[in-house]
Length: 197
Image (cartoon, rainbow, N blue to C red; front, side):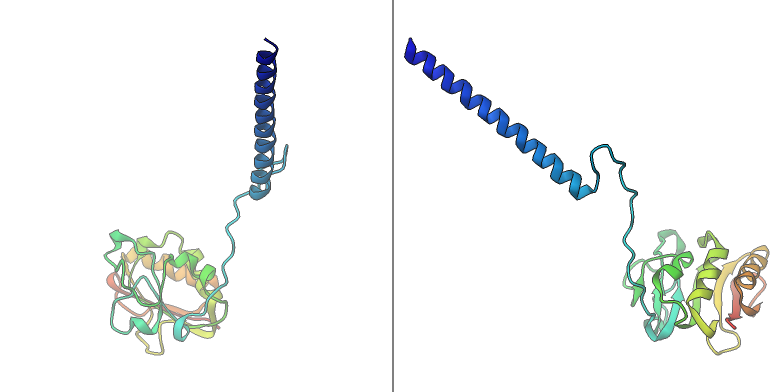
């Protein structure tokens, strides 16, 4: 009987030891997780901060908005959100940066770009023309332009006639000079040209 009590006492002691180890282990694990996540007991969860990536320089200091497979597009950095409904390319785009026109200043170094063009941008794919124009102004160097040196070059935008003034106002308000439509009044031939002073 005495032997049975000793065995029972040993079993209880072993169980209590395992329980204590489990409790201490879970406390250590909880403390480690709290430190990793950055949350202290009683503290608030920190806001989700996306790390800032370094801004890049566009290939040949030229950006093509929403294109990527047309001849010569390999000489540009192609900023394209690859929207499947746009009819534009979705893969195989050379020098591709996956983003929208409104995000241009998030990706590219300010004051480094000499030309921004487009051959297939649809007006309605740009949700905020004011943000896009301000971003374009930010990344262009002084003398940089929407388009190349050719007088009929610019942002080729598929737009309705009533959309053209919206774009012209956005680029004027952003600080551009010589803002005009050098293409057709509407349709796939609207071409917005402008220069950063």
